[in-house]
Image (cartoon, rainbow, N blue to C red; front, side, top):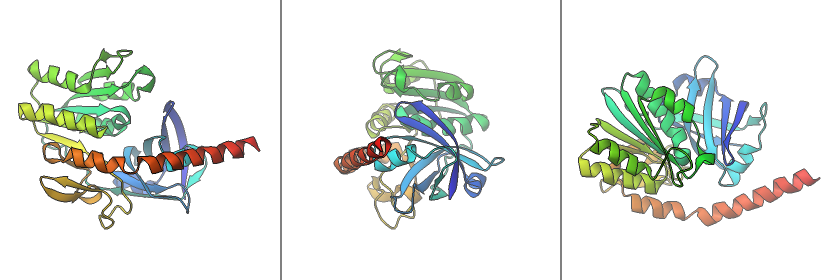
Length: 281
């Protein structure tokens, strides 16, 4: 069992949890993920490690409430326990040798982009962070990003915070102003990462995308997280989660991700109704 020691609501649909998991914290690196189960009957859910602290033995995760499991997880109080917390899994972000990097995050994907920006900053790289949200009410980790970024650009779809527009607009503006990046790392919605990769391909800039498809066992055996990269089948849980963005078949990945949406929506509604009935008693 793993105890929750801190909880913070970053916005109405995104929650931060800090969890006691000393063995995971001791080995965790940016870019890696864990797989958890809220209870013994729960489904296995992957979440990227947002931060870790070897001294306190804690691991931070940030998640958006979109389905049954995230709804259940969001109801576990501080001091409460979750059944399983396995990791770290996946290959960590490669930061060595990079001198100047643009980190592009979108929505809740910014929670995954932040530890990458932090690791690059600590490794001595010049970090330009571009993060985008639909509106000001959904912004997360702005203070944290500013602390580890030599240049920080905040975008919003409606212009209610930062600059109005898409992260691709800001990235293209930076490149055309003369900024030369060793690499661009993008983390967020699939469609966002697709168009970031199209922009960087135009300028010949190496680009890495962090993929988060459905995962079950974290070993590659189930095949649920398979992707097509450079015409070959890869498994995000063992080969990734980061891949050459210019080689990823994003259209296939988006089509596969949509397959489970109706089921997730139905399960989420049922779980919300159960909690509502419990509160009424």
